[in-house]
Length: 211
Image 1 (cartoon, rainbow, N blue to C red):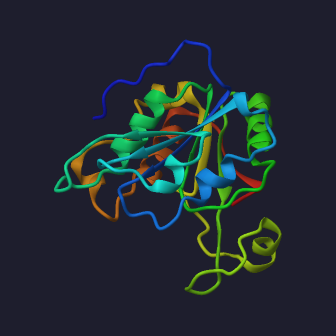
Image 2: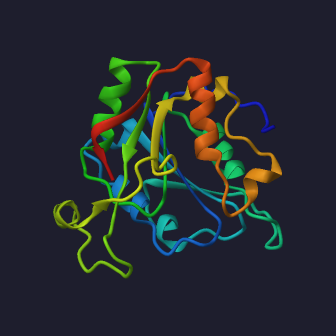
């Protein structure tokens, strides 16, 4: 089981966005596009957690992003749950957004997320992920182009983007760190979804939130 998670009670932003890496990311689109949200800059924070000793250069060079390196040796098996829990412990926001690091977000995304959780403090909200229709790099990464190009492939992508009040992550003691979840085919997104359901929280796949 992961270590106990505790809330940071200091002066804080209202939203914390967590994204993780194990020295395998090809890009940092999420960190970049999350840095330009329409909310006041002081109202949200972005936390990038690197499992190993050297973080991707892109988020390091983004002033809005706080980079945490967990400094595991290169021969240590990557474990995404360890990264998620480190991000949760560091998060100062009451609302936590856990998202894949290679996505592109519209500038009003966090504003919508905030509204969702102000209206319902118990809600767990998932955004739908749309992907490029074919393999290969896209030439245009604007939201307007992607709206016209990307298609909906995975109906239950638990790891794409989830948001919830931090206290509920603490209530279930964060992500499971058992070694079985450290494989390349881990299911910690489904596991945490199931534990939220067992806790009795309402879960929503938001019809208008997509990445």
